[in-house]
Every structure is written in structure tokens, then in C-alpha cells.
Amino acid sequence: MMHTGTVINNTVSFVRQTLENAEAGHDWFHTERVWKTARTMAENEYADQLVIELAALLHDIADAKFYDGDESIGPRIAGDFLVTQGVPAATIEKIRFIIEHISFKGGKSTTPHRPIELDIIQDADRLDAIGAIGIARAFHYGGFKNRKLYDPSVPPADYADATAYRNSDAPTINHFYEKLLLLKDKMNTATGRAMAQERHQFMEQFLNQFYREWEGKLPTGL
Ligand code: ADP
Ligand code: NI
Image (cartoon, rainbow, N blue to C red; front, side, top):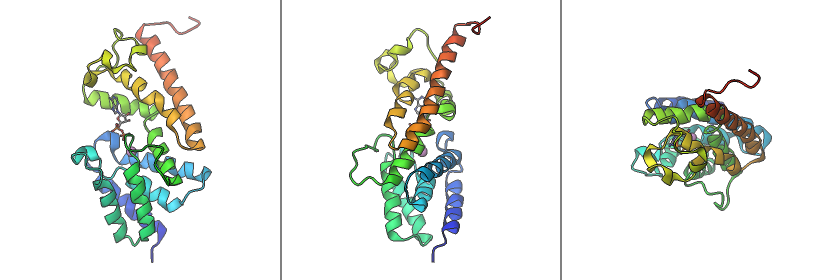
């Protein structure tokens, strides 16, 4: 007989161990944030709580980038693990479906029979790419790739046009215009939209301040 609390605790241990050496953008703490955010969101939406928790915990168990783009590995590792925990087959199927459909590229909002739990976890995953955490992750990624923070010779308005830079070495500020500032309009749920709104405003405020500081401006009133 499955005991829900035990299954969740075991899943936490399994994911923590598996993500031990993961890169910081998708490490255990990313998963933990998505898990917490998805739980918060689920309080506001009608969703299967166990599916939310297990799918959030297992959503990045195997990043396809590190498996030759093979997107079947994550759902398989998750499914095999859940079988050992005595989770019912129908629940496992639902979780596998969510993990398969969650990624930014694959997760088209037109997927037929989209479960609400997929909507919620995809929103939670996208929320982790915006706001204060999103800013930190972007510059962390840019630093890892040795990118410039910003290049004033390419005006921000031109950033959406990726040809301004030869794709790979665009400064990190570029990423805000090509992806991060677009995410608030891709939220699936009302709760996700409300949470994205706050984080989006914070990024806009960050960018304004960034350009002011770049130009050595005085604070208003001085
Ligand atoms: P996802 O898990 O949503 O597919 P990615 O693997 O694309 O995310 O990115 C992981 C993190 O790194 C995200 O916070 C994302 O914004 C950031 N990131 C990805 N590409 C870039 C980039 N070119 N510049 C700055 N940050 C990036
Ligand atoms: Ni993720």
C-alpha cells in the first residue's frame, strides 16, 4: 500500500542524489523552487496534489541536453523510479506525460488533453526563469559561457533581432529580450500570470536601473 508522505520523501532523496553534480541552472535547488512554486499554485487551482508534487520533483531528472537530445530518458527514469514506490500505473502515466511535455521547446499549449498539472508545473518552471531568480540564473549562465554583461554598441531595441550578434556570443542582457521578457505572456494559469506579473515588473525595473548605472547617472533628486 502506497503511503503518500513516504513516496514524496523518497522522491526528494532520489532527486537530490541524482542531481548531485548537475549544473547550477538545473540543480536540486531549481527543482526545489519549482516544487514549492507548483505547490503554492496548486492551492489556487484544482489539481491532483500527488501528481503535482511528484512531477515537479522529477521534471528535470534527466536533461536531454546531456543525453544527445534524447527526451525519452527523463520520463523513463521517473517512471521506473515511481514503479519501485508502488505508485499506481495511471498516476505514473500522468507524471510521465507531464515530464515529456514540459520543456520550453516541446511544451506547445496546443497539446490535446493537457492536464492542469502540466499547465501548473510548466508555469512554475518558467517562473523560475524570471524575476530575481531568473536574473541570477541568466548572469550565472552568461558567466559560465564567458559572455559580456551588456554591449552598449548594440541598442537594447535591436536585441530581439538576434542577427545583431552572431548568435552564440550575444551579451547576457540579450537573453532578456529574446526570452525572459516574453515569458509572462506564455503563462497557462491565472495564478501563474499573477506571479509572472510581479517578477516581470521586477526585471523591467532591473533593466532600467542597469542602464542608468551603466551611464553613471545620479539618483533622481541629487
Ligand atoms: P529550460 O530549463 O527552461 O529549458 P535552459 O536550459 O534554456 O532552460 O536555461 C536554464 C537557465 O539558463 C534559465 O534560467 C535560462 O534563462 C538561462 N539561460 C539559457 N540560455 C541563456 C542565455 N543565452 N543567456 C543567459 N541565460 C540563459
Ligand atoms: Ni526545470
